[in-house]
Image (cartoon, rainbow, N blue to C red):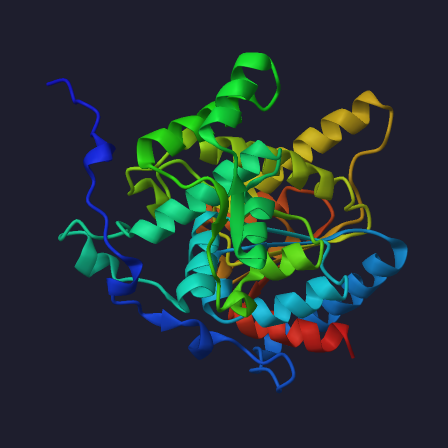
Length: 367
């Protein structure tokens, strides 16, 4: 049998406020000024070491990258990251598509997270109108300005809306400048406006919980933030407005920007917190690109960087400070450890609650 593509334009979507959300922004946010939850004794010394290396990196002008999974946001770390980006302790943030979805839902509705088990059988999992519609709106507007996913969505949350040109303006631009670098973005914007009856001009989207948004705070603090989604990975695909070109254009921009951050890592620090797939996969490709360009310019490859990988899994029972395990070890197949262990510099794996790690790290860095 020959499978036929689904007609996603027929998807029925529902108001986000009608969804049973499992977490609230006010319920998860951590107070940076209260004593943090303790970390395991085996981890504590490494957190102290990590804080010292971050301070040294910033003193020498080296970069500090935080690559995080969605659970760091869901565990309430937005306020802590707001402080760390504001004060320059973190110079680049990166997350996956899920990290942006929870971020936007907290900022707009004050709650997020749904039951996959309950909602997939009813066809409602991810089928929430405002989430898909407004995130696409942010990315459409970002494309028209040559911005990426992180800046585009962060801007919409921080500024409570976006600007979209009129149909006439887009048509005139496409006719007059068909070879302009922004022509594809203009064409996608025109298509979306006409197909989905999108408003133009100033489109107000109020975000009453923007203090719960990592993206908004990073945007306000001028901290570059990159998003690395997968097509079909995220619930914004479960919407008639879904446009892989819009998402891909924004993600392409952000991969370039991520590489710019990797370029700053001589003597710098990489924190990969709760990102088992996206983080190691994107980092290894980007580091290879940076080294490729450096070698063409007769420059040494990235060196003297420190990598701290944080997750709740046990690391396969392997001491990753000793190097990579043999293929006969189950630990060899832990991608979030193995990939980073191959990236040069010094790598440490810390089995720890991600929010507890970050909270303790913050208190040590500012001490």
